[in-house]
Amino acid sequence: MKKITKVIIPAAGFGTRFLPQTKAMPKEMLPIVDKPVIQYVVEEAVNSGIKNIIIITGANKRAIEDHFDSPNEDLVKNLKQGNKVDFLNELEKISSMANFIYIRQKGPYGNGTPVLSAEPVIEDEPFAVLWGDEFIYSSPPRLAQMIGVYEKYGGVVISGVRIEKKEDLKRYGIADLELIEKNIYKIKQIVEKPDPEKAPSNIATHGGYILPPEIFSALKKIKPGKGGEIWLVDAINYLKEQGIPLYTVVIDNAKYYDTGNKLEYMKTVIEMAIHHPDINGEFKKFISSLDLS
Image 1: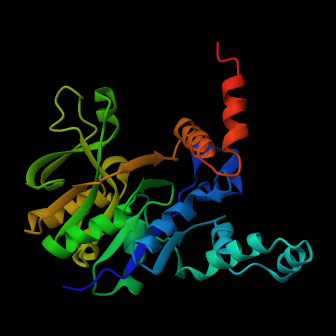
Image 2 (image 1 turned 90 degrees about the horizontal axis):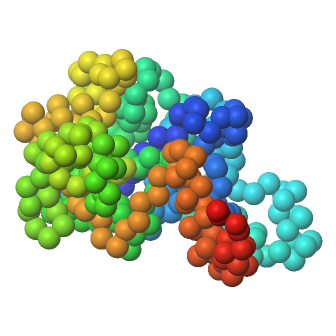
């Protein structure tokens, strides 16, 4: 079985939910205290042993490339003169932690298109996909847990998140499952945004994927789905029909952060600020002083 050595991070969306902020700034670069969202995603991949990061970009996404590039000479000079060595070390660490490849997305709308755009650099090997505007905080990292399942069972592996509030089940793709062992399940089917009363389980399958190279031919064969878009889940279902098994692992010790809409983004910023070592004390005092009536 071939090892997972590459991760695709789609980051080509327009970020319309955050306009006008995202008119010229990628939504993946929105800050979570002092780091952009996409850096958390890259760090998850790196902490899972993956060093080849393929970021699928679009118009107005140059800031992503600049962020992961080496700091420019003027900034380096400024930080050295100000004796801000810690900041300089942190910036140099960002640019050296992985090998970055950038590809401009081409093709129709849909979350399957950025995956297909990466075919020339993936070739005939399995790979992972992590979205650029959400992340899961877990120990060990989500992707590392997924790789462990893939190395044991093969097939397609999708990260699973247990949805605590029943009314929230209608927001996700909910899996009909067969228990394999512990927190690992075989997926019988995925029901998109079900009625909470009819949902087959409380486990949402989304956010992280390990896919075989056959996904590319599947993406080329499927017809546009809902909204006339190319959906990754349709290609995954096609592989299932061809006999490739689907698995999910419900991530241990995990907290899911959805930063793709304003409310969940603000919740994430506040929660991360409360635990940030530089500001947590004063920030907690500020939060507790607010009149929330």
